[in-house]
Picture 1 (cartoon, helix red, strand yellow):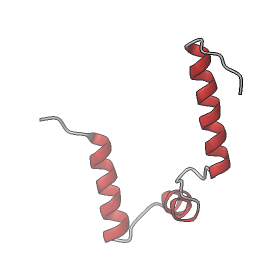
Picture 2 (picture 1 turned 60 degrees about the vertical axis):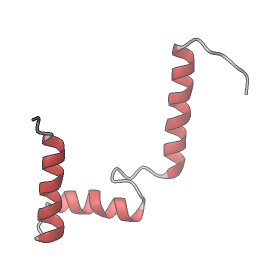
Picture 3 (picture 1 turned 90 degrees about the vertical axis):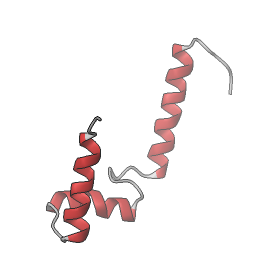
Length: 70
């Protein structure tokens, strides 16, 4: 039986922050608050996300040598 350290750490953070109201300031202000306000814990807005997806699409197509005109 394997143990997923990332899952365990996330659940411990949830217990401390939601159940015990204990969370590091930066984790709360820069993570949880961004997640609730913007929808992303990194602060990435929808325009930046779409730009990132477009870049990844172009990179994948170039790697696969698939070229087409828009």
